Image (cartoon, rainbow, N blue to C red):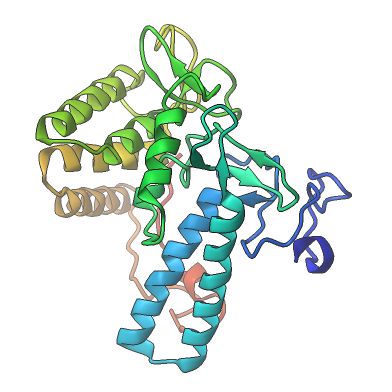
Length: 302
C-alpha cells in the first residue's frame, strides 16, 4: 500500500519523493537497490525473496525460543503476502521463448524489469543463497541462464574478466562480488563445480588490482584501466566465502584471532586501554542506544 499509505519520501525519487508509481502486490516496496541506485519499479524481487527467507527463519526461532503466538501470526501473515506477491507478480513470461523467469523489479501495474540483474546482493543470481525455501528451482535455472548471457545487457564477456556488472559503475565494468555468487550458486557434478570454483578464483585474483577485492573492474582492460573502490569489504568477505567453499574449510577462528591481534596492537600503540563495559551506555539492553554503546568500542580504520 505504498502509493496510498506510506509516509516515506526521499528527495531523489520521482512523484515528490514518493517514488515511481506502483500498485499493491503484497511485497515490500523499496526506493533503492542494494547498489544505492534508485529502483526503476518499486518492488525489488530478490529483496523480497531475501525477506521471505528471513521471515522463515524468524518462525523457526520463535518456535524454538520465544514461543510467541502473536509473533507467529504476524510473521506468517507477512510471509504469505510476500510469497504470494513474488509468485503472482515477480514471475513473468519471456517474450522470445515463453519461459517463466524471475523479474528483477515490478510495479504491480504490469511493468517489469527482466533479463537484468545487479551484481549487488540480494540479486537474482544469488536466489539460492537467500534462504527462501519456496523459490522455484526451474524458474531460477532459466533466469540464471539468461542472466549469464548476452540477453542480459549488464553481463560483460570481456577479454580479461567476465561477469555481471551494475548501472552504478557504468557499462563494461564487472563486479568481483558476482564472481563469488556465480560459483557459489553453480550446480553440476564434482568436476563442473571444481572448474567453476577455479575459474572464479582466478578471475577474482586477476581483478585484485591492489591485492584486495574492488567494487568493479574493467572487463576488457582489467587492472590497466581504472577500477572503483580500492577496498570493498563486502567483496572481500565474499571472496573469503568463495575460497572457503572451494577448499571445504572455515577461516573463522583464524580471522577472529587476527582481528583480536590487530585491536590489541592498536590499543598498545595508542597507549589506550579499554574495557568492554567502559562506555556511557553501560551496555544496558533496556536503553535504546545500547547497541550504539557497543559500536563505539569497535575501532574503525580508514
